[in-house]
Image (cartoon, rainbow, N blue to C red; front, side):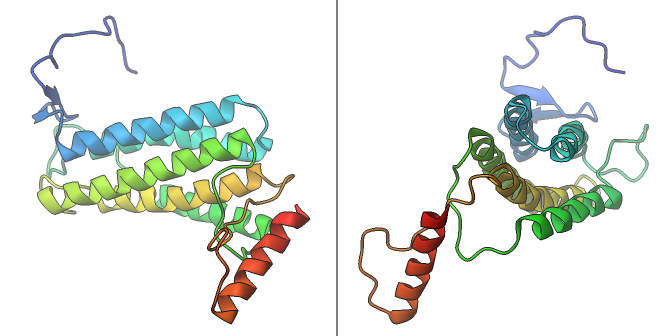
Length: 215
């Protein structure tokens, strides 16, 4: 149980913070950037779930993920150690398997796509797209941290934490489609107002326009 008696501590005023193993790191450290971006994604998920218009099952899944994102942040902020003084919170294989199971379930539910989709539709779907892009950013930052500190080595990062971010972004893409189930996907129309020259490009554009009109 976390017990907080004072929110401000003044310990970060010099541009430094402490990782979960109590080691000192700059606030610009890539680990700090990565778990900060995970926190951003969690906040956006809070907005999406607070709207109350998602299917109960998906809403419950996202609430569980919000809790798991705290575990993920703890994982990213704890350098790997061979014999840590206490057992750190880590993302484990079952966390990823659960995300993949949800991806399979919602992929079957929303069906295949004929085009890329635009962020939008309902406000909840748009918020889920925002969360997805933040998770993608966190994944890129985590990989940069892994390049600096190593992956699955002493002092490095847990590779499953990075895999989790990858699968979560996939799930949030599908979740946004579920949120738009009643109004349909907003499809990308290639070239917008330009006339396609290549026949196959013209066919793809016509197909996207027809799908958008059908919604």
